[in-house]
Length: 527
Image (cartoon, rainbow, N blue to C red; front, side, top):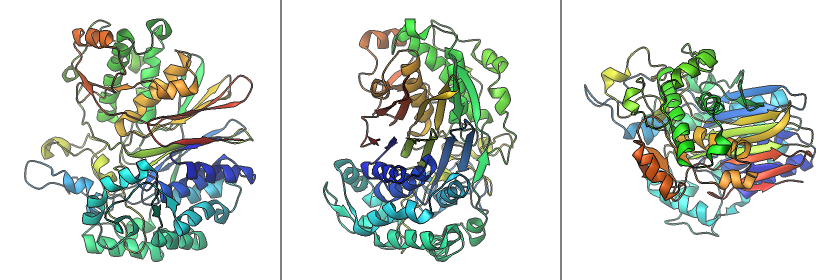
């Protein structure tokens, strides 16, 4: 089974599985295809995280997160002595980190894949060459970013070739096809030291970016030890730092395990209150302690220890909200929600959970001239925006900007086992809302007995310490429960739908059940 953000990418993965490829082969094919058919988040100009569980029950995680260019400095976005400027961190050439996706796909293929890269790139090459028809959502998302793509890019490109796009229009990307064909022929060196690298560097020169030849040549994807925890007899496998999502998920689950959540009820005031109180403390920990483990000492084991979690949650009042101002201070980061996730299980028993992103929708808006792909705006994920310079530059901030550093993320690819057998594979886009979307989905299945479809469709809420409010999808929480939460001291703010969880669940007979989030165009397929 394959679930991804686009039907054509899902089909690319299924074709690979039908040809005898394994889950990693399918994941690589899906990733390349998403770079063509979902350019708002699918990418070769971004990065991500992947969790893999093999049929022999070993779990591995790959970090292909972007890195800050060598010339990056903590005050590179400061416009005056006191404050930071936000736009340059979001839009244009300074906003992008060194892309990791191409290195990540080759690291996967070389370590765990079984089919030739030429076979895995074939669907993406065909889709870029002959084009594909835009869905209503595709056209809407592209039209919303046309002004950004026109203003930030320095050369003509396929995205801005029309004044407006409509559903049914065919998007053909000849420059991207040429880039993918060169990568397919020459390998990852094409992207990091070859002609494509030269096109990136020329784009940087035109836009006054700071990424250099050395930055590209030195990029490496990193295999890391996944983190693990327990919840009601299940084993939860997650990505560790520089992803903060796994730690948040495990901290909150460990707290909720002490309560009879099933009896409390789904989306009832008592349940929401308890989850919010745990979330606000977990996100405060994220802001204070998490960052690039290669550049700072990240106390992962301590953060996940029973003693720390018990102490951290010990002052939760079951009847009253805790003001976030009373929770220890860190540096919150506003993280874009335009990410994409796919989940895959193959016939051999291997599983992949992968989340990848450009950060913002269409990244920093820069399409590399004559290369046809969008660059990320991941520099915005460092601790900076809205913070005074003298507060941000403190040496204790593990997520401050630094040369070669990987920025903190909320991506939460997750694999869950039951009695040492595969049980769930899931993840979501959504920026800082990713961990809570995954959390609610897990609890919907485990505590509330929901089917995969119900679990991903149920209304969502989110709290991340700062701002101090519960963000709620429309009509997710009943009026009576909302009133009760306000009486307890919570502030409730309605917001657009959050997350697009793709869930594969293995039933008691070994069959695969799909939970496809209705909030997007995501598509499942299997055989």
